[in-house]
Length: 373
Image 1 (cartoon, rainbow, N blue to C red):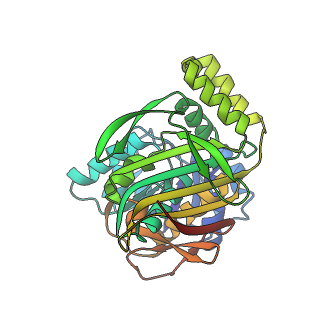
Image 2 (cartoon, rainbow, N blue to C red):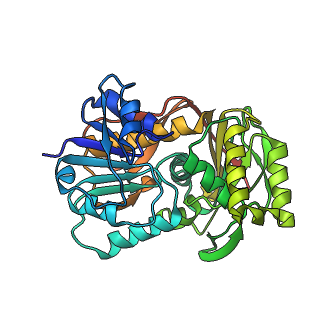
Image 3 (tube, helix red, strand yellow):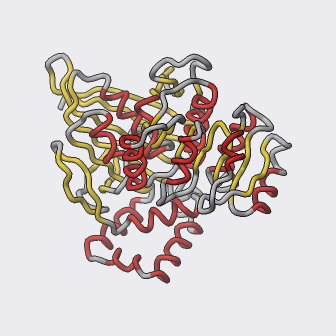
């Protein structure tokens, strides 16, 4: 009988927090897994026995005995190969992915579309962005009779601490080209272009934001059937945001492709504390309600992006572990929704699966509203 929860990358920046949250609810069956058994053991000693260490490398042949006892895998590492996820799902082991690799998601989705025999449930787009951005978009769209466009805006604090993988992805994305969907068609886009002023509400106020290759804008046109979606980013430091936009404009972000410069930039992002630990998300859904053209607004703000990412992941993981969801490949907004109680949010199963009703998302403040276009 499958009982165990394996968090791959479980002693990392986000993975460790996920292990702690899951270990509180299911002590003794949660494993912090990774290539370094020493680091896993070191972390687990801080859990009071609620989390156990496990050496596991997704690049090696998977242990069949491990799959026989593992009910759920939470993946906190970026991957290029779907073989590990496929082995889990074929064995009936559920799979929750906390990465943000759009190309990897496409590979996994094709696996679900073309391969038979997937016995486990896979949930993708789990975290802040993608993740809460998807669920806030769903909440806004459900308030409209028809949605024509979604604009997602994200503010990250430069005083926050982030994991190595997140820092590397951010630096690599500063000068990247990518695709998004406009009027139902894929269009080319460039990172840190197409500036837009966004009022995040509350403390952040109005900031300049720029296009950035978050995978939610590639997923939501299909899961929510919205013709146009764009996701933009800014930092809480206006000077840093403007400086990066200028570097992009004059072509200096191309220097990040140099290995030495890239390494130094990642280190600088990791060490410098130019702002706060605050994050904020704003969703503007343009459409029609009651015959009038309106914009549904939904936003959140809080402290420490990695903590809310872990709480979203833990809520999804607990639901998948404790409840029954359909087998196959799904994004978070296809199985879950947000419940609002004033300024507080909780996560719940959209299909109303039996088990725990809601999973609180403590530590953030929610707001919503409507305005005329």
